[in-house]
Length: 233
Length: 241
Image (cartoon, rainbow over all chains, first blue to last red; front, side, top):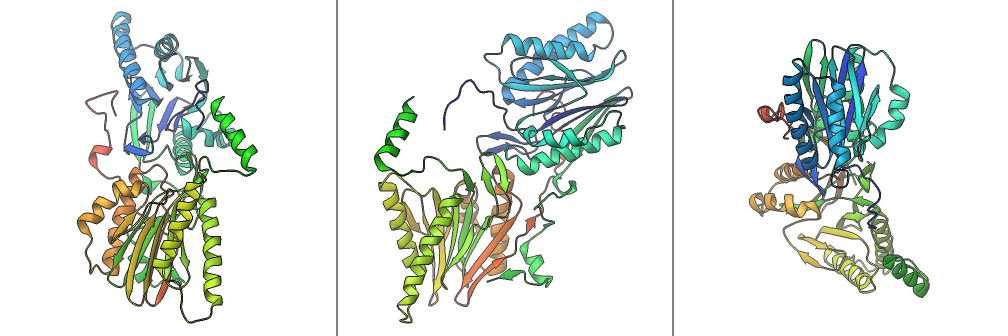
């Protein structure tokens, strides 16, 4: 394998942030890998910064955790000084500041999503290098490669909360089907004026895609149910 | 750069290619002897790097009347091995002497092939599991890409070595029945599905007895995500996993 130190590479994950009419939906898979081994099959990649701002983390688990700890600490102080909840824009820019100023040492892609009373629901993308881009929706992580075509076709302006969440769950589930570095369950966090809702969609409740089969408890159940030609020579 | 120079001179000198790294790969194969014969299991995934590109790859095939071959590693090399074995079985049949190659013989042939290729620095990038029954004698062996080979009551390739073999060591018995063997293999397959990045939820289980070979239709297993700890793992420790 050639060592191309210049090429950015996104590491195991699928993360998504989507705005809808009234707020945002953040989604992620739950697989953390060390090499080819799945170190944690039920991780939580959507992390809270404040009551109204959450982030999706991808790339190095360590880098994204420590940066989110710093940003949470700064935002906490900022909230006290300001006397009211900080805006999503400030949270995103703090993430950018740390990412940009330490770009040579950090390897992480972050999606910042939240709701504030001035701008409503917002999604900011902060990829490798520390660029900041406000977007109606964004995708990240290694699994996102499989979703560009999907979102080009399926994304629409002005979706409802349920439509947006369904889109996110479907997308993460599609990425999990093809990306070896993504897997496990689909977690979503919905943020709007009313507050925050966490949801959890596990393997068996997700739809089956191409070449995926209905799960069974065991081959023995299939054999004993006497279905035609369960075994062949 | 260094690597390119070595590659160029290898091609210029030999006029042929040599395998440097695998492209489309299959993951673990697990196998064990049971009361009536030998049973093998593998998933049906063909990964292309980290992409789960092909999802109906049959990685267990029967060889002649008496053997089953399961392979992990580069799929194109496995297909080439099947061609070699086709020829081997054909020539054996042409003798028309009532004798047929048993699993022990096929295993030995494969060992020679793999080892000789390794000596030429052009390996077949596979780990093979060879199981079979002849005249009531059960046989189960393994051959690696560098020619390492051995026989045992239960074997596994790739991640299966680390995740499945400990389970097999603890729960395998000489007189294990077919049903118990299937359940034991499925226990191993589930762990591999949870913990091996390149595993997919689509399996085939194959058995071989003195009567013959049967390979199951593809099927999927139910996975368990219902632990309460999975619901909200970072409760009480925001920013952690």
